Image (cartoon, helix red, strand yellow):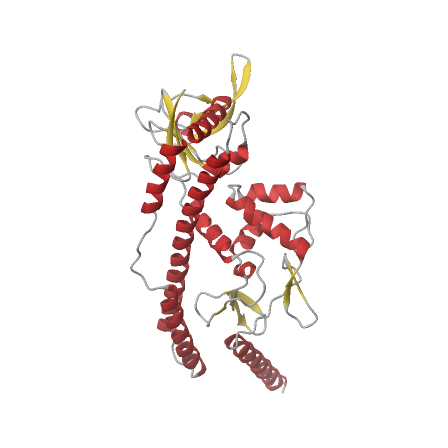
Length: 379
């Protein structure tokens, strides 16, 4: 009797769980979004249960996106928020890199919502796992008011991809991204192609901060280690300042070079347009729902949906990268036009904003700006 009753209770629980799933699936199909706002930084809910922006928290979200695009690492952003006494969405004082990472990747900050990112695998234990295509997903655009404009969100996604493609030396060794210093990850060796690293140096009792080629600091199996010079940080600052002032002084020739770079920035991709992808996704979504309701196999359709979504995202990111390049050119042109006198003081924010790479040679430095313009500085 106990066994029978337990079996009936289990069937009833399973039936209830299935009904809940079907109810959720129906709401997802209708584009009705349910979001837990309790720990959702930047948003709260109104009396009707709709997501609305929390102005104070929204400024924190904007700060995170802005600092990431300015070149700061996730760790550096988290440390800055902690130092300023800013609380997380859960009301805690401790910030983690993973928290910043999730905020930067959450499409809800641009007003959209990807539904059913996770699903319940066991109706008894309520265990949830990441949805990798096992059950349908639904993407709702412009569901609620955005905190981050779509173009900024896509710029951040492109920057996330760029930072994953870490620097690789000729030896094949990869380096992780670091945004702790404005020169981190942008100073390269002209001899071996490795990055330069910032170190505290004590040379004959004289302490200073210098930058050295990593291949000189780490043991190598190569027959000869790199012999490129060590550069004092003050010299690097001087070189960056000279390059910026040179750009402003010889503005006519550099603006011409920038205009040529603008012409090269237009790239034709041969892929479906975003409108064409959206139309095809809508068709596939209907097919998937029909097959799911009829309990038919929909793996092939799900795979096609994921492929098209990735293609759409890549297309959007490529477009944003091109837009960002054009924006950088425009910013540099505006910056040049606004400089009436030479800059006399080093500005870390200016380096992050304008300079993309500094290559160290034995007798000079090559400074490459984010607009694609290069300047050689003898030093």
